[in-house]
Length: 381
View 1 (spheres, rainbow, N blue to C red):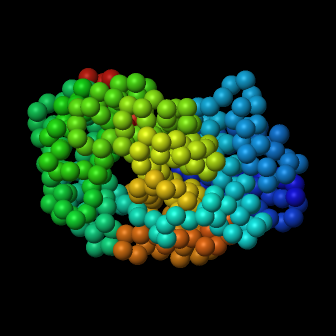
View 2 (cartoon, helix red, strand yellow):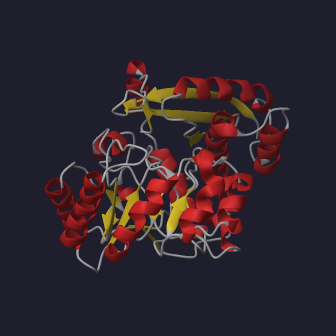
C-alpha cells in the first residue's frame, strides 16, 4: 500500500480536517490544527507531504521520526500539530487495514468506557450554577469552568472574592458526589495563583489547570507546593521532552492535546512517561470529531487515564457542529457521564465527506479574542 495524496478542509467553527488517501482505496482522517493558525498549519502539512507521498502508510513510527526529526528545526506548535494530524490519519488507515479499532493496535483496551466532563458557561454565580445544573441533568458527573474572565496580574480582594463566589456556587449546584475542575487558562500570574488557590481548597476541585503560562513552567513547582489542589497542565506542551520538567515538578494531571502533541504516537509516549511519575492523563480536546475519536482511542488503552475533555456544546459551536460532520454520531453517545468503547475500525467514526466539503466551501479564519488590562496593556486570554 502507498500514500497517493491528501486533502485539507477548513471547517467551522475553527477546525482543519485532513484526509490521507492510499492506492488501495483506504483513507484516514486527522485534525492538524493550531486554533487561530489553521492556514499556517495547512502549509506545514503540505510541505510534509513532499516526503510522505509514495510512502507505505503502515510505517507510522518511521514517518513520525522523519517528520519530527528529519529537519534541522524541530518541534513547536505548528510543526507538532501538522505532524499530529498526519499521525492520526495513519493510525486510522492502519486500523481500517486490519479491521480493528486503533486502541487494539495500542495493546488493547484497559477500560470499557471513558468518563467525560462538560464545560460551564456564564459570568455570574447564578449563571454558572444554572449551567452546572444543566450538565448534571444530562447525566455528567464532572464539569469544568473558567473561574474568571480577564484578570489583572495582581487583582484586587474584590476580584478574588468574585472568583471564590463563582466556584462556590457551582460546587453547591453539583454537590459533593460530582467533580469540578477549574481552568485558569494562563490568565493568572504565578503570584496570583498562589494567592487564590488556598481560598479554593475547601471546595475540593478535581484539579486546577494552567495556573501559569507555558513560558513560566519552570515556576510551576512553586505553585504545586503552595496548595493541596491537584495541578494540571500540558495543552501548550508539544512533546515528551516538554513534559519532563513539569512531571518532575509534581503536577498531578498531564493534559497533552492529541492534535498538538505529535498525535497518537507521541501522546501515548507522554502518557507512559507520566505513569512513571504517578501522574494521571486527561487529554485536552476542545476540537472536532476526529480529534475526539483519536483521544478516545488513546484513553481506552492508557492505564493512567483520568477523564476526557470534549467539545459537545463547548460554546463556540453547538453540538451539531461536532456531530454534524459524522455519518453516524452514535459512537459519541453519552451514558451516565461516559462514552462506551469505540469498536469500529480505525478511529471508530465515519466522516460525512459531503457535509465536510460543503463546510469547507465556506471555510473560516477564526482568531482568538484579544484582551486588555485596565491600563491598555495586553492580557492573557
